[in-house]
Length: 468
Image (cartoon, rainbow, N blue to C red; front, side, top):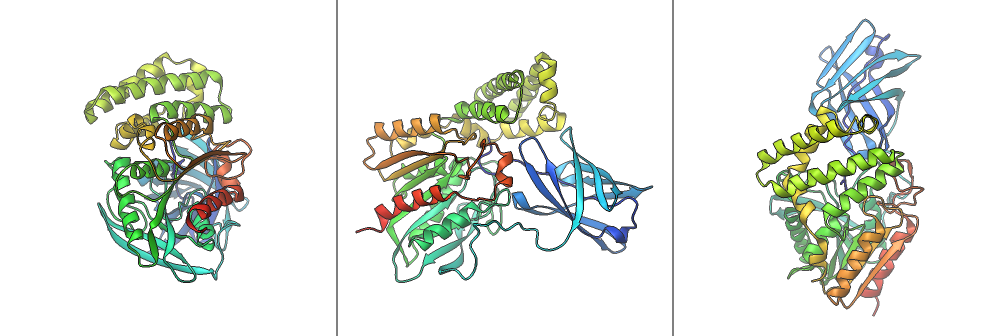
């Protein structure tokens, strides 16, 4: 499941055939059309000490400065090796454009690049413009694994103010939850601070200004980071600790529920696209919906589901990581051998040796084992503070019907005195207005955060935090 960094774009450098090295220095941009999404790639080519060097940016995923390890250019053809991400590119110059093939994890994709100039960071229409009608300050503070860095926005006027900590989903993201060229947490923080609510958003462990090792950990460890951030926010002299809570997206909503069920937790909880069922139930459902929306055959969907069921069973049965990795590898081999040839051909990219090795590592990780087994309802039943749970009707990653029903049932079973559970029509996992809800629409959609969602969140908070 990917609740945060949905597609790992790995990339390479292009340099030119048919041009001298001096002709290809500069910035080149193209679009890589993968199965889940279309992603912009930007190659920055320069000459250093008499040789060509380059780096890669992926504006849609907030990835910048990926180094290119090797560049070979002879007889009009360029070969590139990006060892850090196990990817490569070969291409030539045609009519002033770089035309070639991207190869990664056993899959091949055509890639064409054009020379561009100017800022390629891809500002979206909802990104706030300076000057801002509120104060913003960067802060750092100690966390359980090192330093946590973030940005605190404070309304104009005299405090203390009600406040919200934003907690992002799975994977490493910066404080703006930057993904596919969008900065949802920047937009949400701006909206809430204009309404009189202070907001703290932080870089995840091991990214941006935050330190610490994000590997060999689970959601329980990230919950400790969130608790440290919540404590720091409540200690701010302009923040009212009694009116300070958590807004979590996807896995961040799950983490918020974990903390809200404990002593010293938040004063309120907003769950945005939060899971209400265990990962072992969510992931097969997610996979089926995404594959079907992406045009996969029913045979491939069924084959993928059988593979998932067997892999998840191994994760639950085998405790020792090295032994689990061996069992997972054997399971892949057995399922691939028994798979219908047409279905196997459809799943070729996911079943290549590199892709299988990457999936085995992920499946054997502490994070995945915890996510597979953890049932959010266990903690949701214990929550006594106000809760707002929202999902988009076109969310294919955390489907609204199953998850909202489970959240509602848990809140009612625990007799939570103040809760609201709602499905927002037409919105996807990122709370954008969507056509199908498929991941490939995330980057193509200019809207970052639907006004319907922003107003629903802001209005619910105002009723509880600002009105007398």
